[in-house]
Amino acid sequence: MAGDDIVKSAARVFAVLELFEAEQRPMTATAIERALSWPQSSTLALLKTMVQLGYLAFDPLERRYEPSLRLSNLGRWVGARFVQGHLDDLVRQVGEATGETVSIVGQNDLWMEFLSVRAGRNPLTLNIDPGTHAPLFGSIIGLVALSCRSDREIAELAQRVRKLPAKSRETPDMAHTAEEIAAIRAAGHGVGYGRYIASVGAIAWPLRQERDPRPLILSVAGPTEMIREAEATIVTAVEKILAGHRASKSWP
Image (cartoon, rainbow, N blue to C red; front, side, top):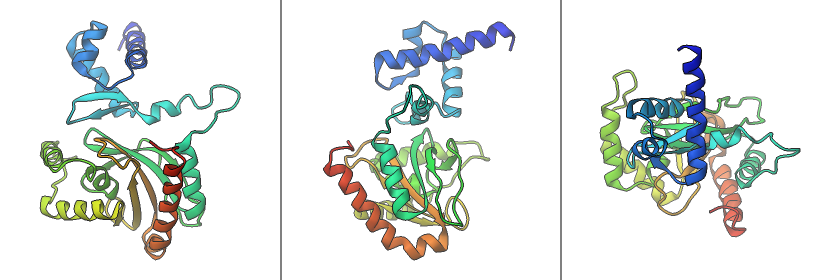
């Protein structure tokens, strides 16, 4: 792009962010286009780019966009000192209790996106960067997110996944998926070994108990053998911490 086009695109990014600040709600591409009086094609292209970069989240069922948690992280250094919120405190407590890598993950379109990652302190630990994507149906974090959806919504998402380009496509086994999701709903958390990354185990919890259509997911992950051996201890420790946050009303 020419220099003027780059400047114009940068200005439009900030216009989108300022619109969300003013509206304080998820919005469709059509609503954004109308509010800013932009052409449909360029609006959609910009929104898709912001999703790909991880600064907007897209709900493929509601067809709505909203700023991601990753975007809010950009401004944490502003001011003399940043006062950490309950999410940071939760991640810190879980990391100290387990010694493993702790992540906050959210659904973004047909993927799961790592929004915040605290590396484990054990000699063998999982290293993963914020912004990394994981499959929705092919990871335990994705299945935990799906467990908060209705069965109809899960089927619709599976259908959309099957329409992805071959390189990105999953082929969800819906009968097996239904069994796994039922087990997650019954237990309140999910456990998976070697699903998204070979030799890595993960335990994940939805952070909102109500049927939120797009909850954040708390993940504790590390080498399979270490997580498997400590699974019961990790579950007990994390659920105690989560109960404390709910009791103190520091979590919605």
